[in-house]
Image 1 (cartoon, helix red, strand yellow):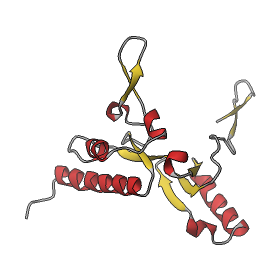
Image 2: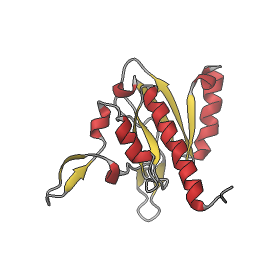
Image 3: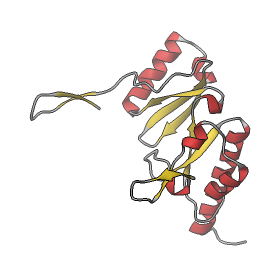
Image 4: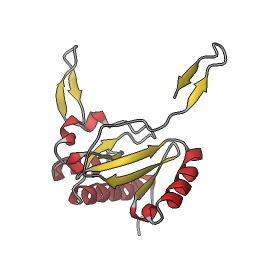
Amino acid sequence: IKPRTMENKMTINMSSVWEAARCYVAASLSVIPIDPRPTKKPACNLLPVTGAWPDGGPRRGWKPFETRRPTEEELQSWFNSWFSCCGIAVVCGAVSGGVELLDIDSEEHVVPWLEQVQHRAPGLLERLVQVRTPRPGLHAYYRCSSIGRSEKLAQKIVIDQATAECKTK
């Protein structure tokens, strides 16, 4: 039996990420690789070239995956190699069958939100896909027949002590 080294753990971990990405795409969801640090930023170095920067360098982005799901080859290059260490983000909207998500960025707001949903719509929470986020927070996914634009439903007001001005965060 081979001892479990960090390299073995990474391979096991990335293999499960690759399998999860494949399952998401099989379930008609579009996905992209994200930075492994808890930033939620796309892993742009892995994404296709979509244009050029003013200096002539290649511009990479996830825009193509708003209208198409990644291929098996793309998934394999992103998630199933020893050098890739990234997470998965689901691209919401029509490309993913009308998937939308509610993103609660603050742990202090997760429990009150869960309680309100349970009170106002008993049984709904059991039907939502819920994912804890690194911030910590919560993503609640659902499908919607009418796709809207991203909207802020609520935001924190912060008072700048030096100027006494209110700012949103």
